[in-house]
Image (cartoon, rainbow, N blue to C red; front, side, top):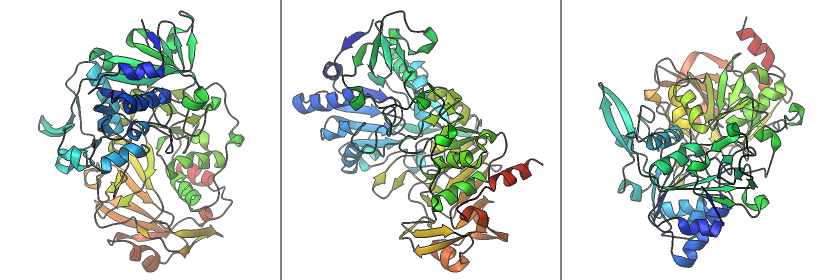
Length: 526
């Protein structure tokens, strides 16, 4: 039976040298009060120390809350750190840049599925996800700094029946550090106020079956036997310690941007006209052009950043019911939210656990995805995981692009450009300082040459649209108001193929009022 303790007591039960697993996304699933207690305990006593932290999604609000607390204590608390998206943990990133800890990044779905393999006692995860990317041992094995390159190996290349696979290696999990909404007196955990059903159950099982401990932070305590069994997401037999949060408004936020939004957790359905439209700028143009690629019945995934706002375009144009939007953390339907609430969805139709969603993604269940652009090179490779000294990791990018038939990369053509849109055209007020179309990307997050031959790959910017055709980046559309040589080709480090049927982008998407999505979508179904 679970023992009820304080956050300070929880910090003291974590042993030195422990491997610690956390789950969730942003602040969803994040046990903020316990993390602060761990930091403070280390500062005061030097323990726990030498921790190996394993995470999937970004954990934190990109400001002060989140896993970054574990880096605020300085060197020694965390010595190894791996995750899919780590960009929000500024204090830990500073240690990683100084090689004061080993830092690896791996695909989100592979991390999530590896919890289940460990829980079941299987010999790790075997998959093609990551081949050809920076996770492939031939390209660095996911190491993000010199300490990691000289440290543990987390993935190896193997051959099975004459085909190459990546083997993500299992490990012993000593501590699961999780969060729910309510615990009953027996330690059963529910998630009713959470914005996602995270991977907590899988992490808890991995810890228990490794001989480790499970610690869960909650807001509420309920009498034993009063919770519906189907509402319980982590059974009490898997929970060793429960910490009731002393100040939920401070330590128990639902997302990075909301303490509690009932439309994110399914208690209410929010009127769609209450959801703000995007402001009219080049980002809205991008999202409109991406929306033109959907078809009726599509299940689509929208990535962090500009792509996530495409759901608002569908809502504004009245075609939200035409497709099912989804997020990789488990929400289907509704209006997927952008930052600071990415991963959550207003009025979701279904919320499944994180692992189940990646089963669906890896098996090819999506019809289309729209993801961000960092750097694109002449082979169609896309880097979103490491820009110079800025380490973020791939998130779910590598899994999602591996098996989805239609992949759209979306972002501005140049970084830091000042643009004006209106009256059916685009104007450059001040040219950008950062080129995104480069000769060679500095890290491969999407490997263009490993793309399946039947996969449709597009690169949509506000100035131009490209397609990956026969392994070559090919210009197929140009924005009204743009000069091909001066505004496009002169700002690329390589010369793309140019389609003999080069078209102008629809001028309608460069007008403040559009209303043209319906005609485009209906034409596809005639």
